[in-house]
Length: 410
Ligand SMILES: O=C(c1ccc(-c2ccco2)nc1O)N(Cc1ccccn1)C1CC1
Image 1 (cartoon, helix red, strand yellow):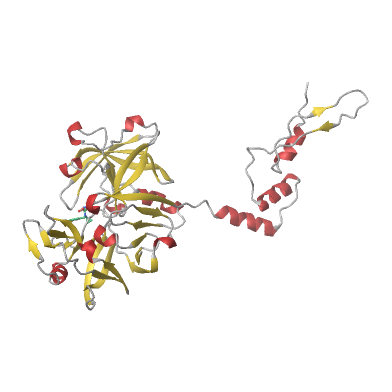
Image 2 (cartoon, helix red, strand yellow):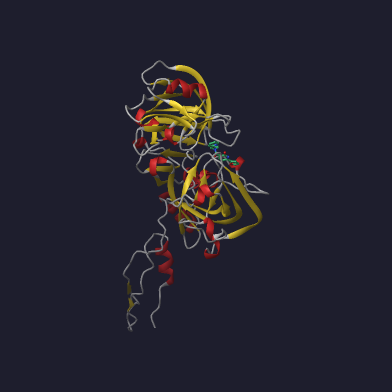
């Protein structure tokens, strides 16, 4: 029978050497019972921080742990694991929206959704919808997720500024974005969506990155993904790096210094309406002089265009030969060439430049003669909306920790 020298196992385990494998113990008469044991690394041994291993050794032999060692251990224990993550986001035609992959449930169900800093509901197309409302979208099936739990009695309903709407009930399930997972995220399953969503085959839902104060779940509003994960991030912020006709990214918990040039201009955020609100001090048209003109608005990745006060918009289009407000098109239209002037807006004591070629949003006719403007009036909304036309020219930091927005060129 092979004796397994248990005392040796214990001794080795505390030093990271695997339990010695049973060696050959020579018990022939006259022999002192010597043993030769081959050591192998213990695959299950968790490498312990040096001071921790030293403290363990003191403990094992009943020696008091010196004060300085105790202090090091305490500091090591206080810094919990921190996190950060990144996910790619792709523009639809004309950069009308940017779509980003997320995973929901167990096993993971992969959907592609619109990250929207202008709203705060995470809702998705679901198996609870009428088949006629689904045209090509991928749907979330809570019954196919072993981790989904219905949030009994909860419902949601949201209406967006473009008149679109959706509603349904609520599940708690695991949601992963990039390498970041929230195990108990409220996932709002759609039962109804308006035609604007049905007719958008590539968009499986919205992921709100606004403030939880405007989440529409009743009776108890639910946290956004960002609100659920922000305390475990290295920094309580996310960044939006949207691009014109090319993949961009949303990063969580860190500012990538390689993603921007020059300095970040910071401006305080007013989140009293649940949005990433700020006030721009003014604007310039092309190479013209900067005009002081306070514009209060929000940074909204979910809105395509740059919607500004009527007076600013008409001052801009006044500089374009042939530009006019076309009520048939519902906005300013102008000749696609020559390229219109840049539009510059202030952010604190910095500026953001929207290049003229990004102001031409899209041709209004097949002859490509006239273009619909990317800058339009914010009439009736109550504030301006710095949507994708403004955001895609910049690297934007949504800093919940400092309650500030950072804008940088790239
Ligand atoms: O679509 C929305 C929008 C987003 C969320 C909510 C909402 C209601 C309740 C919770 O969230 N209501 C909106 O209306 N835009 C953009 C927009 C575009 C055009 C006209 C009006 N607005 C909000 C961010 C400003």
